[in-house]
Image (cartoon, rainbow, N blue to C red; front, side, top):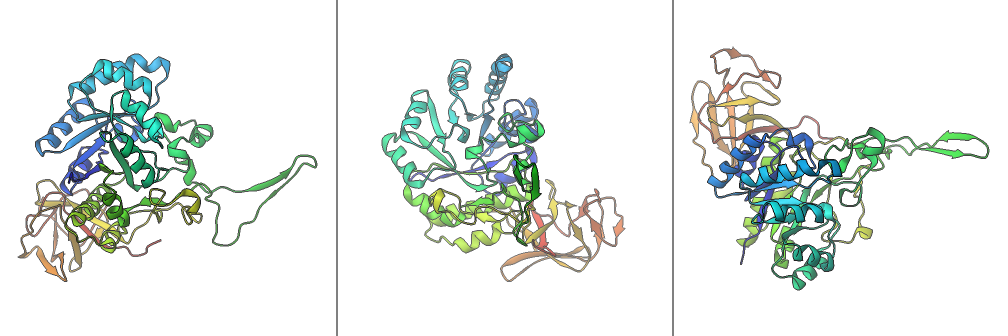
Length: 424
């Protein structure tokens, strides 16, 4: 049985390293040109993205380049140059949204595998056949598709790879084809600069043009008017069902603009879900407990395993704040000797440690602190807080940019976390 791929977002080089360390088989990302996440794309120059590809390949992992924007006529020359530059970096595939760009990519980089973006909205085998005939090797299906429809596509085109989103933010509009941000803010979502206007609160009015009357509609208490604000997708509990179908080749996590912690924990949870499925030890509660520690707007299982018109509780109307059960207290540097504070840490408090996949931790007890196991989890306790320059602090907070000394070496990108004081 071919094992399904776990595909994580690479918003920058550090988040790419973290996602790979925590279990991703492949990552996706790009520079700002023609990518639907300009903000994260600016984190990479061509040179840095080339370094990232080489880093992933050295680990036996893959990198897919997002070139999934919708170009205008005056951008086509720049697009040709961009495709050629990206091809020189030798990624594992281009992710493209439009037939014209597919045609151009085949001309400029004829040996480059092509993946079709979810923005193309493929929902049926006729559309899938069209793109397959154009040279597309993998289709990232529309988020509105059902597992049954994926089975039909695979039945008609057995050699076509299918990729599906399983986790992350969901757009209010159909497969991301939204113009709210463009109309209100002049920021065009399908050119990569969405302002997330769907997350805002709206005041509703009723008007009568004949009489010129206008009055504000009052909402019920605690209902709110975040009328476009979708909950986040979370299909971790259905990974076993998805894999049993045998038609999905890659599980994709959304979130190039999200935090390093998000990159780590989503990769960790879905890596465990995939591996546990193949070892007949699938446990949905375990993955959900881990995912609940990330910042989210509430979770929905979206549309893959149930029909859209049957869905309830997919919108979060009371607020758009993302919150989770835990706060990230610190992130261990790549050298494993120091960490950067992300929240607040005091001496003599027990803080949970989360480590990358397959990494061992050495338990220590010295004048700096202790690293120990309790109830199946690993914890760290600082007896004193000392900076890299040997200055002792009473406590450390997120505004402090000094590296803090660890009691002992830890795996690179290990995470210190503790329960949130208040979960929204």
